Each structure stands twice: as structure tokens, then as C-alpha cells.
Image (tube, rainbow, N blue to C red):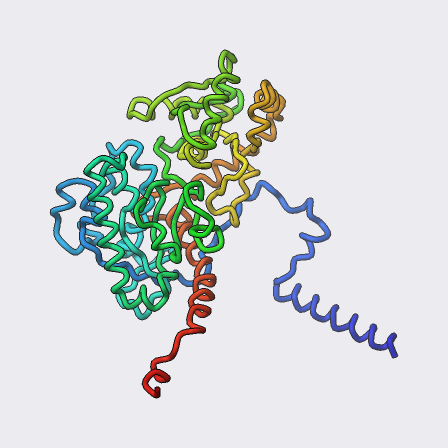
Length: 432
């Protein structure tokens, strides 16, 4: 009896496997012939189904482009693709926190109907799957006074108060408790006064260094890259890229940072005086950004220690410079990590390892040239995922972010449904 049952079960399993192979859902080569799968073939991140339908609130200019310059503040309303101001070329390091600008730009872009887009703007909020709040909270922090005693910070606080009042009056914010609302906060101090009031929403952050776990987490929020400030290396075609890059390890930046960033001063002592290591304390000026561009392009490895928070713009500058990142961190969160394997083009060291004299540099000297070349090629393959531009392009930074938002929405819907368990329906209240 048991023998017959086992035989029948075996036939059923074989039948299911045959059907899976036939329709293409199972590829036995990946199980039995893994070495035949070439690791050099770049992944193809195709648009995941139809684009996300996003409703963007029509906020006054003072909440977004009005902070860019006086002309933008006094421009016509509403903001459209035709009158949307370009990102200023002289913005310096403010550009690194400009994800909010590029997300808004991507929704204003009408397209030509032929692009693979991850999100499109809808005019009817009833048809929307997500709601975008176009408040440039990072630019507001950068514009309206960094020091809390500066009177200008009152402008930033007032904008946050007004935005919160606006959202709380919104039927759609009330309906979901804000859980399907997307709010960029890429500067660590963005929305510094009232951010805890928006902890139910999908936040776009660069890491969780300044956020308590009760407010922000990977389960509901999206980790974005900093927007790189160095120019992309578009003609990196050296016949021998390893030998053409004469500096072993490169770092230029501020060495006086808070929290985990204190490691930078310690690394300066360990790495000083080594011939092929460039470790220099600088501040971000237009001239220094140009010098950093040249330095990264002539270096094999680019050092990425923590800043005031675990991440910094330097990592993404290295990526678009095709300089293999050396990431020193014990708890960094990286953008798109469910799609991109950073170990294919980056090297990781714990803070303890990096602070052991001689260890980091010795490991880099022993790193195989052929493995470095593989990483260099992979950097060239994936760097377009970290580009922000208008109009947006397939699988660029803004489209990658919208795809990440799409993946957070099931969590948001679950939270919305659970929140409704204890609510008394309108028909029941009328009955009572």
C-alpha cells in the first residue's frame, strides 16, 4: 500500500518538474551546472510590472523649487515640466541631497510613451497606489540655517508645521494614516523638528544613522544613494586600467566628524606617510571637488569610512569614478541591496580591522589584479543605477528608487488593514 503511494507521489513530482521546465519556471542548469552560469554577464533589472501610479500633491512653490532661487520662488504656478527649473550647476555639495528634486522631476516628466518607467503621475488620487509629498526637506535644512540658534531655522520649522497641517487635512493621508505616502528625507537632519510625526510614511533616507528604530526601518523605508557630486567617468577605456591607476588608496574629505565618523582621524594617523596612499583633510569646494574627481580616477581603491552617519556621498562618487570602494563600517545600509550585490565591486572591512596598523593596506596590496579588473568592469556595468538626470532613463537612480517604493507598499497595505480592525464602521455608528 505504502509502495504504491510512494510510486504515485514520485510520478506527480516528476510531472510537476516536467511542466515547470516546459514553461520555463525552473532552469536545472542553475542547480546541476552552476559553473556554466557566467558571473560576468550583467544583470538585467527589468521594470517590475506596470508602473506605479503616484499622485503628487500640488504644494506651493515655497515647499520645493522656491528654495532653489528667487526666480523659481516667484515663478508661475503650478509647477509643470515646462517651467520646472534645472538643478543649479553651482550648487556644490547641496547636490548630494537632491534626491527629492529628481523624484519630483520624474513625476512631472510626461514621457514619449516608449520608456520603461517605474512610476507615473496620475491626476486622480482615487486611482493612485502611492502619494508623493514634494517637500524639499533636505534643501530646506541646507538653506535655512544649520545652527538651531540661527533665526533662519524658524523658516524651516514653519514649513514643517504647515506641511503637517496640510497632510492631516488630506482625506488620503487620513485614510491610510500616511502609510502610503512617500516623503524624502535624505539629509540626516532633514525635517529635524517634526520628523517623528511622519514615522508611519515611507521615508526616503540615505541610512538610519539619525533615526530611532521606532521611526525608521528597512521594512517600510527606502535607502537611497547620495547623488554623486564628482563628474561621471564616461570614457574610462584604458587598456590596462589597473596599471594606469597609480595610487593604491585614495581619500579626500573632512576628518572631523561625529559618532562613527571619528574613525577618520584615527585612520589619518595610520595611513599617513605611505607613498601610494593619498589621505588628505579637505573641505568641499568647487576646486576640491575637481581634485577629488581626478584623484578617484587615478586610484585603484577609494576609502569610504563612516561620516556623521554610516554612509556618505564619497561611496557613490567612487562608484561613478570606477574606483573600487573600500567600505569601513559595522552597520551600513546600502541602496538597492536586494537587487545589487555590492561584494561584486566593493571590499568591506570592520572598524576593528581598519584600525589595526598595516592590516588594511597589506590586504589591498595582496588583492589579485584579475579580481580587481573584474570589480572595475562591474562598476562600469552598474554605475548607471546611481545616475540622477532629467529626463529620467531606464534603470537610473530615480527609477530604481520608485521600484523600491513599489516593494514597500505591501507592507503599507498590511499596516493599513490592521489599523482598521478597531475602527467602528460609519454604518454601525449611524445604526447606534
